[in-house]
Image (cartoon, rainbow over all chains, first blue to last red; front, side, top):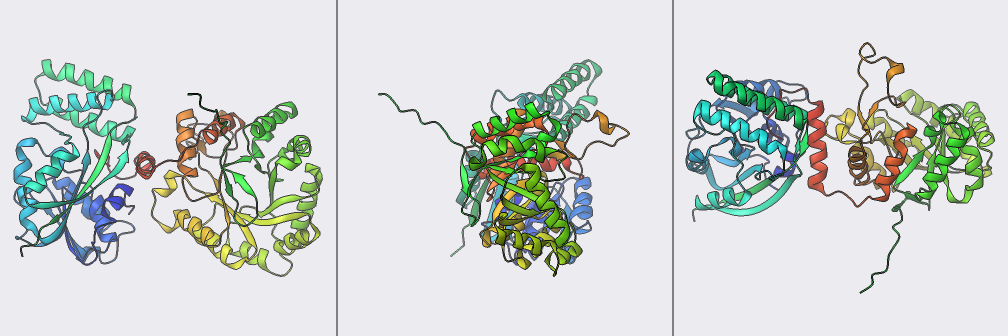
Length: 247
Length: 303
């Protein structure tokens, strides 16, 4: 399968060959594919979404263009990232590609602690995410309605865009040594397909609310999705860290 | 303090080892086919005013050769002219070359190219005794053409094979755009062609830089209702044209050919005149945008 340039760029200065890797928040498996391409001996694709676990299997392991030995090299796990089934000190490369924007602030410490727990001494950590969108971006309004709907429906935001420095300081606080920052996308292309996906997610949250709330929220979601179409805005960054060795 | 004004000139790059520095955009003269003679003359003048010094034409582009002729003859010294033939044997290639010289009304073609190489059989044929390359080389000895090139939107492996087998090939023309670059399979690996051509110090000419994708099904949009004459659907907004031009010209290539429809040419000239390079984060942004537009995978929230 095609490995996105964002993933390839985030990994190309890490030593992945013959390592055990964890893709935390596997999504559709883009980073798992990138880690396989870069020669990982084992990739644990961990996600709390059962659909995603299945998608990773269908695309990355069994899909067209998958390496013949992918089935031996990839294991998917449906698990909460605050408590993964992996042992302590067992992973050489941890990736969180587009993960933290779906981790609400209240869960940040537990997820960071868990990624640190499973990392072996000397391990790499790659954290790729989005800076907060500029104020004049219309996409920001769509995220605001998506978050408003999610807060009302589930009691937490759907998305939180952490500045690079926030996540950098978080992980250095957990004992990781900051290595480098790269810009993956500048600006970020929010295509029609992304806009549609976020509008759908927002509508789904809104649909679970009482009609007097659901109605106006859905109207606003529809209006924004139509107005935006597609928009390029914001920046996607890649942070890399090393786990200090216990000498 | 007064600052002297420097008139910007369109950037040029060495066309391999031909000794010619080509502008970063090449005028694809197929655009003239859809214009009357007066309009064709005006378009050539506009292209030259923008500083473009490399033109490309073919006998299969309707009457583009005939319409290019008058202004080409008037400005012959300012134009490095590429032409081509799809004939694969000596006789056919020789005949097409003479016909092109005649229709253009000139004595020499600067770059004569194998047009649209598609199959291994065709490569075998042009390189065999009595093949088209015999005619190309004979014409070069006679001074009718200066340099030899090849064009193809075929398999990248085939193009690389041609580069390996034809020692005196000096330029290669092939498709490159973010839609293609987002795909990792060998069938779309034209980046390998760029790499191989650069190893050989060849000139590299990019086509289909402005392709958005195939036209909708003819049931949905009949051929006669298509708004552009290109055989693919082109990007057509000025910002998109500029983005696609900057993307293509930021690859390690010599020059980018305009889309064939005359309505799009002035936007490409403008993009080429204003070209400042595109950094890698912006290039990835264009590739990601194209990947998601085309993507057969489930709708994604992220990049």
